[in-house]
Image 1: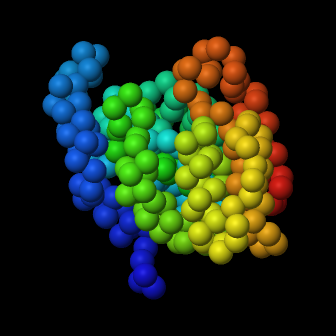
Image 2: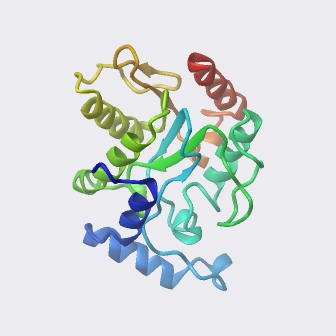
Image 3: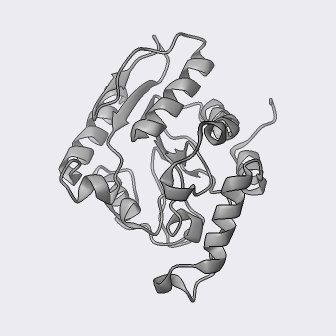
Length: 228
């Protein structure tokens, strides 16, 4: 793994076909398409991470949305969750623009890298444990390569579990017993990145007010202040 790079992780992610259920679903959705996107060509493949390779903050989501990242080919791009998250990242100074609508739309991240626990769109947004396990190597490789990382921010409970498991393996320390909640933090010892939690920026949370943009911007700023 000494010659591993983020580009090689990206290539391996995009080529992956380990999970038959997810392969069938992502490719079927890409053929059927949603009515409002019927003229578009869907990505229909696993979605790699995206962002600043020198980032001190690494965000981790659940998995691509069927008509979001599975359509656009970039993590948190092209759906309402992406619109909410990227506007908050822009307000907190991590994103170059407040929108994330398609690949090559000019978006870039500063001091921030965004990835996911599972790289293929799952039916009902519910990956199985074996599917998360199949993707774990990609997350671990990214974490190893993002050597400037000082904090991980997990969006939602599924990403929280995956991020804690990966951080524990890499730190060779026991996983802290910290329950998921918005703003929760789990430390792995001096010099190790701290894992923080946020509610997922899905419409289920944002439309109900469980997660507001000021809440997320405040958390992003608090996390950055912890390592700045």
